[in-house]
Amino acid sequence: MTMRNALVYTLLVLSAAVMLFPIGYAFSISLMDGGEVLKGNLIPEEPSLANYVAAFDRIPLLTYLVNSLVVALLVMVGQVVLSSLAAFAFVFIDFKGKALIFMLFLATMMVPWEATMVPNFLTVQSLGWLNSVWGLSVPFFALAFGTFLLRQQFKTIPHEMYEASQIAGISRFRFFWNVVLPVSKTPLVTLSVYSFLTTWNMYLWPLLVTNTEQARTVQIGIKQMQSNEIASDWGVVMAAVVMIIIPTLLLLFAGQKQLQEGLTQGAIK
Amino acid sequence: MTVTLPRQRVKARLSDAVSGLLYLSPSIALFGIFLVYPLLRTIYLSFFRTDTQGTPLEFVGLGHYASLFMSATFWQSVQATVGFVALTVPLTILVALGLALLANEKLRGIGIFRTAFSATMGMSVAASSVIWMFMYNPSIGIFNRFLEAIGASGVQWLLDPQYALLSVSLATVWMNIGFTFLILLGGLQNIDRALYESADIAGTGYWTQLRAITIPMLSPTLFFVGIISLINAFQTFGQIDLLTKGGPMNSTNVIVYAIYKDAFINYNVGGASAQAVLLFVTVLLLTWLQFKLVERKVHYQ
Image (cartoon, rainbow over all chains, first blue to last red; front, top):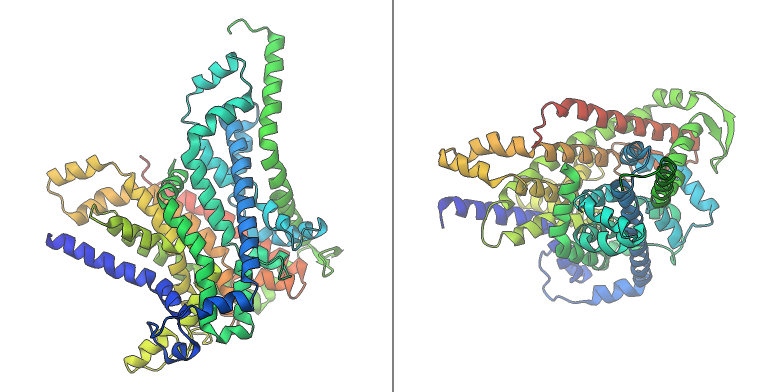
């Protein structure tokens, strides 16, 4: 090994240790009993899963997990369907005003969502969607970033194929369904991973539109936990934290490569 | 296909427009209901005194804006927001860039490090905040334990107005590194290897290559990351709600938290709307300004 490589490895290991420390620390605390946490140990002397049992016992963690899963899957499907339909229109159908509509789609990315949350809350309330998965998911179905990402991919499909299918009398929708979607698996996966991650991790909106235990998502569950008496029981809190980060960490590790390529493509081209 | 009759052509074009809009209609409808309408409604409400349910009662013109500019709390929240942006955005990009450069080396086992550096992208703001809250705990948290171990006295990280914004910012930098790292690494991998090969042949050193090839070629990605980070920083909410609730003494009361408190705790919907409009205009201006400023310096491939 050259001196240079040794230096790079040293820096890599140190950086990884710093970046991963909070996650490892949380995991370690989740295996300790209360006394050990107070002693300030870094590594549990007698690791135990008691905190995990307690987390499911004392708060409806399972309900929260199911709610988050349902909402994240709904938004994922909604965003993928709506984005791919819109991207298809932008790439394959020619009509007046298309460029303008595309500009407007891009402009939506500049509206900070928080600036619209008050009327959105009132809309969802008047629809009777408070404490429902619809209120948590439908407002996020339209996604300019997703449309943009898929449009980049659809543009690589030769236009001659589309024209040939038109001449052969194949309907637009069949072309979309049987040709465009199957060759676009990678960006569709990227978008799905992105949608799932961001929705699962959403905080402010679920805080506004849910106020019952049956409707809450995991992120709000964690807030509840932290703000009531369980808060002093750090082991249990950390067990819940570990439970809610595992699904997204696994998904991230599995989809990291696609995500990186997709996000970069969306960023540059 | 060359001999299409005019009428047929008009018909075809019309049907193109209809089906084009058909494919776009779900997105357009939802953008209309959950983005355009609420944006206009927010602007409208910012000119009215409302009841607690947001029903406009009385036109007050620029009254809400005037009272905001007179209010010390509002200026504190502007200060907190600007401070937060300044503390988080440059540091996040710098650290993520350093990590991306390291992780772009062609070494055995580099995949493990890439995964480690992007990990925080999979962590929710809520979960991360709870972990940092524990690390900042004055009696059992790791930071004060460390300070005590080296003989210094502990710090009230989240309760001392001098440190609270800094503490929240540090936690935020950690949370945002994963996403920023992932995009920058992608940008680095898109740079043509041939550029480095010819530089190697010419005998140019690492730092010169970094300055002459990597940074210029990465500039579109850096530009994108800069805008996204800036906008994200202005939208920060979760870590404030969990770690400090805007305190102590409003030192971390960033704009989105202030809007949330005004609208959903104080039921001052008009005032919250005026702040939301200011947030919107700020983000718009900054995006535009950054485009103008960086456009000329960015090197597009």
